[in-house]
Amino acid sequence: MKKISVFILIVMKSYRAVVIASLMLILGVFVVFGQVFAQQGHTMSFFVTSVGLGDGGNLGGLEGADAHCQALAEAAGAGDRTWRAYLSTEATDVLGLSARDRIGIGPWHNARGELIASDLDQLHISPNIFKRTALDENGNSVTGRGDTPNEHDILTGTRVDGTAYFPDDADHTCNNWTSNDEGSAQVGHHDRHGGGNISWNSAHGSRGCSQEGLISTGGAGLLYCFAAD
Image 1 (tube, helix red, strand yellow):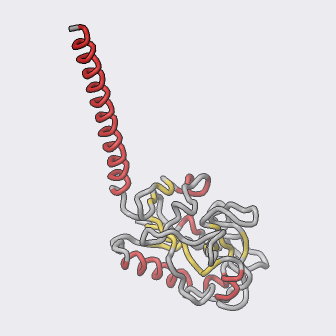
Image 2 (cartoon, helix red, strand yellow; image 1 turned 90 degrees about the horizontal axis):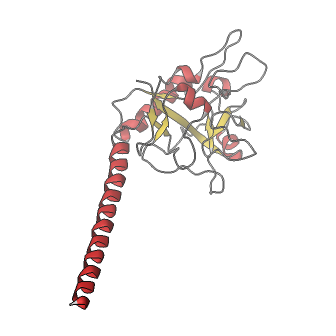
């Protein structure tokens, strides 16, 4: 009788352990699915372009750059938003148009629904922009430092805080995004690596404005696109 009682006790403990383990597994599944559903609940409002326009720093001005963002977004099924390229301009005697003033107020999410930044302050102070999160419009990773080719230079023409450069003797925007020859463009690193500079939007200037010049410093004429509405 004693052996039977011990056997029953062991069976009950085992059953309880199985039930607890099952409940924990089910709870874990719900947590994972909850996270997935939460991410999927946010439509894409930020991406790195999968391709550039192919003409160096000549983007057809801001209008051409915005049209490129819009076209790629439409091809990816997100054309119902108003897309803007994250680019600044320069002027002779006054401050040019700043990239941060063109892209709305946020929040912004990548193609997987991951939060990039909740507002303009977070975007320019501590954004969730890294190689893992700086995806293209199709949800694919963009090649960066250590990859072949390295295409982590993203055209911005802007300073770290997202504002345009004050008038000076240097070109930071490939002649306001119309030059494919002379000049230079300020670029950021979407992977936050390279040359000791981790800035996503203002790492260094390009080596000229030709397509070859952009490639030579680790770029391909790619852009950041944000939904401004």
